[in-house]
Amino acid sequence: MMTDRTTRVVRAADIAGTLVFAIEGALAAANAGLDPIGFMVLGFVTALGGGLIRDLLIGASPPAAVGDWHYAVVVLVAASAIWIARPEADAIPSWLLTTLDAGGLALFAVAGTRKSLDYGLHPVPSLFLGTISGVGGGTMRDVLLTQVPRVLRVDVYATAALAAAAIVVLGHVWRLPSRGTAIIAAAVCFGLRMLAVHYGWQLPKGI
Amino acid sequence: MMTDRTTRVVRAADIAGTLVFAIEGALAAANAGLDPIGFMVLGFVTALGGGLIRDLLIGASPPAAVGDWHYAVVVLVAASAIWIARPEADAIPSWLLTTLDAGGLALFAVAGTRKSLDYGLHPVPSLFLGTISGVGGGTMRDVLLTQVPRVLRVDVYATAALAAAAIVVLGHVWRLPSRGTAIIAAAVCFGLRMLAVHYGWQLPKGI
Amino acid sequence: MMTDRTTRVVRAADIAGTLVFAIEGALAAANAGLDPIGFMVLGFVTALGGGLIRDLLIGASPPAAVGDWHYAVVVLVAASAIWIARPEADAIPSWLLTTLDAGGLALFAVAGTRKSLDYGLHPVPSLFLGTISGVGGGTMRDVLLTQVPRVLRVDVYATAALAAAAIVVLGHVWRLPSRGTAIIAAAVCFGLRMLAVHYGWQLPKGI
Image 1: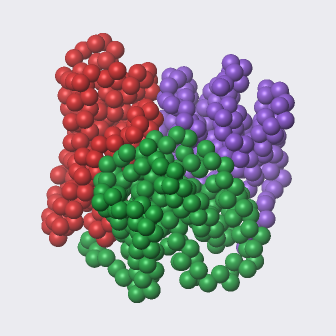
Image 2 (image 1 turned 180 degrees about the vertical axis):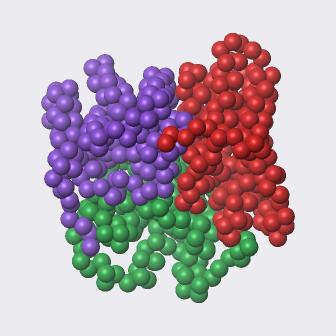
Image 3 (image 1 turned 90 degrees about the vertical axis):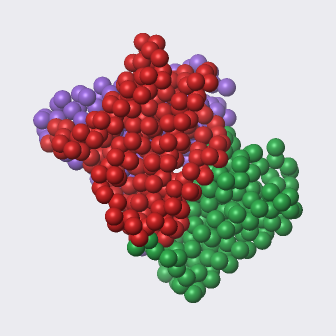
């Protein structure tokens, strides 16, 4: 069902997104003044939550984050590194956090959409699963911290993930090369998100 | 394992419940003043959350909401319609919202119980899965909005779903016709919920 | 894949943990002044949440809590008993609650790690799944009550579960007898947790 090439693209994007989101989750734990286990918990939830939901829903059993031990090790190493480096955490500029987050969002949105299509799902649910892959981990982290999740609070967040998912789906329907499409989709998601932060773009509000 | 007839009953109730709960989720987004993506997110979570949990737990892989693209399209259309109609959203009378919600609860409780039994689960867990199908999506929506979920706050809510589930289970155990049982169960759930709202019924409290 | 013996160890620990956590969840409902359905909801979530996540992630389909009706009956009986006994609930000393909770944590951490290994998962994700089994139900309960979950607030909580999981994993890698290892692991988790409460142990904080 999956060719070796798309499997490799998905896994590489997944592992890179895991690293980026694990760092972000551990930094959220530092901001909340948690202990080392809190760094691990928020690292795991942020980094693996989106992919776990995706894999449960597409029927990839066991989910990659559980069946492939590299994911857990990446999170352990990233969370430990942030714990050790936490005295310097104040010095982390906010643009770096925003950039990491936009990067993780782009990587997971692309990997999630690609994997859903590879498991034979219809383009419409694949759109929706790609977006969930991107925003799911951060949403679970915000829920644990009893904050309204970023996906509801922040403009052009799920939108950027959805744009990447749409490009991957269109590339699939039109039979464009999957690697090139993935790179363009990730670049669009990352760029949209960064521009939205920089210029303070907002979508129209309901009321 | 599932006959064509019960499959059709489950799917029809599922799709109708999805429409009703997608409208309700999008109206919650309108109340919270969210952007169009917020309408989609709350529409998806409210409409598909309960069925997704049910399908994951009974081992229906992939879950209907993901394997059958009609569900996602129903949510997209409903959330878009509510977004477009949002200037009139204030004019929506509260009895309409209550009625929609009671209808969705009844449809999902019946469909969830029926599908669990059709997948060979024992009556006791089927009761519990039918109730989760009814209340799961709204619970996930309330958690995302950091509100104590309705299932814990509102009297005669999970109770009404549980009543419907119990009727479906008894009809199954006594080998009554599944379609008639489903209609009676949905009517009891809907009626209980509407009467409870109208008369302000309350269950006794723990303290 | 699973021998009869380890299956029995897992199931016995799982059922015992379910009873303990169902009592704890129902007592949380009593504290929050909920109705009888609230007792059931919090009993189910607290007792079955961790095992359900574990079984979904390791691909045990259907999950034990759904495929084996004993789990649901244990929760129904425990939640009903606490509802009936709620006038005396004030008289429950806090050390009893702490002890029950430490016991449930130990039982689920051991059963979760053992079951993950028996399903052929690598030791690293098994560590992580054992810990989730222990803390998952209580985390879901706290989220429903819109509280920051204990796993982030309380020191030496996930740590104790992780210690039990590590002992089970080491016993597995070194081929020690699984029953003896399980008993030692549960005793260490329970002891660590009780000592941490008694002496007010804290892990160092991030800031």
